[in-house]
Image 1 (cartoon, helix red, strand yellow):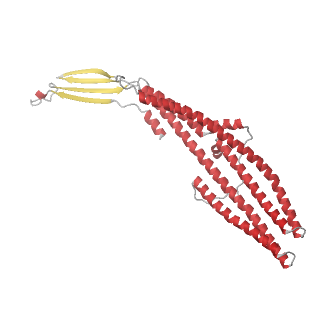
Image 2 (cartoon, rainbow, N blue to C red; image 1 turned 90 degrees about the horizontal axis):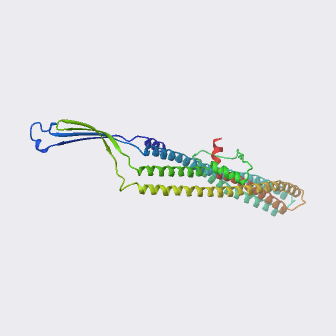
Image 3 (cartoon, rainbow, N blue to C red; image 1 turned 120 degrees about the vertical axis):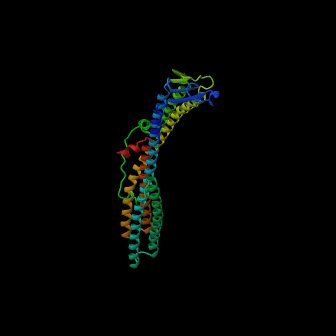
Length: 366
């Protein structure tokens, strides 16, 4: 569409051909009344002369509009990529939660089997088996809920990328390169790569070019050309000029509208800059917080696994009650979930920072 407007703006105005004939009414009934001796022919061929550069300014407006349309497409692309990446993270997180639950269910089922054997040998009481069975049932209930979350996340991702294919993240580990830069560096990158900022600048250029165009349209252009006249048998040849006198209309309304649009475009630039600074700052702070939380979650994760292994061994030897084992099992599961929640939040913050700095489209191209 923008290319078509650019092509239309470059076209020259067509010349105007005018043909007129006048006849004396008293000669119409007579023989030869329609001959050139009793009538007058007038032919004129006029062409508008662009003295103030209207055509060139229309071309400038069309070119700037084409560039703005391109930046609008890039803005939409960055929004789509950010939405698709966020949906992918949600699916990845739900599938990791299901993997942790599968390990927890397997561990609880193993405990149930062991306790049933020990019950038959009268090494433990029946309540110990019941407690293990209750724990396994709780994990299975959470599995059902997680499976529904996976289905919902999958449909949302399919819609975001426009496909009905089956998708999974179980065989994919996240690996998005992100540089350790200060906040100001991320803001500068955002101003260099954010399509909405480029769109705001392109819109300002469009408004500026339109001001020049409307000013040019306020000055009239003359029509010049050749005139041929045949009157009562005599032929005349000459030149003509038509020049509108700008007394009543100097395009004041459109010129004022263009000036207001220019002021709005300038204000929009400042608003966009403030918005980008705010979004990048929020995303950067979220990234730093998630980075620290993930480091802390990793240190606790290994400890929880060691505690569970120690308590399991002590329980099998009969040196600790099942309550301690169930508590260690729950602590391990909560720690695993907390770790993957922290990891999910970390990758979500990475996506947010890359999106706020306008670099998701660059990664997609690579």
